[in-house]
Image (tube, rainbow, N blue to C red; front, side):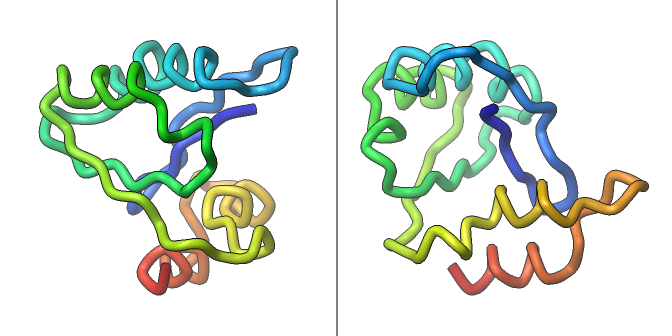
Length: 104
């Protein structure tokens, strides 16, 4: 499952039946993330090698976005996974997930 986390919501997840590689990530960016975000959005990605993908970067640039990479962090602090684990029933991101994003 691949999903995104905005400052106040989760991007609807994209479920794939194979391991994520650069090609799958690029498709996810182009078909799932880009339609959900406004042009000019700053996209923050972690340092997973798959995220350092030229096709994905091109899709973001074509949409007028720019991107930054998070510094290395322990997997236990992955902000998206924490938000998925602790998402409340009303669709809001729990405050601590936003705090972790700000601290990252």
